[in-house]
Amino acid sequence: MKYQIIGKNVSITDGISEAVEKKLGKIEKHLVNHEEIECRVVVSAHRDSQKIEITIFLPQVTLRAEVSDRDLYCAIDTAVEKLEGQIRKLKTRMDRSNGKISIGRALDLESIEEEPIPEKDIIVRLKSYYLKEMTIDEAIARMEAIGHDFFLYLDKEDDRISVVYNRRDGGYGVIQAENPIK
Image (cartoon, rainbow, N blue to C red; front, side, top):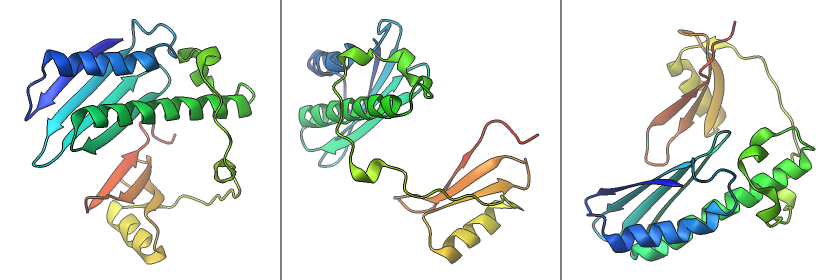
């Protein structure tokens, strides 16, 4: 992988770089053409904890893990475990989809261990509804009225499918489809 290791409020030492690259080597073996894949690691120091954000840019999907811990090396281990879990989940989903998901081209499926399928991972309800055009303020009001953490709507200003959601740190976030409805 091509590593980009960035430090925020901390200088990246050779020891940190080596630890990150060694731990992420476990994930490299699951990736096809891993020499061409980019990996961005952001290490930041806060008052009483260390935070690591690892993002691996695959052609069909982006893997990401973010962990805070008092010990940076423990945070690295936990983040790598999270990424491995994401890869196992992707393999399980691909196996169940009978080839309908194309993520597999970036993963070496033979090297990935199957993850047991938990009951909660099975889709138990399908809901559909007509998307009404509305402003973001209207969408937030409707989301709060129904008591959900997110709300799907059609943005009145640019005809894009959008999701407004409550952020953990307070406030709201919006996710928009890049392609407008024709």
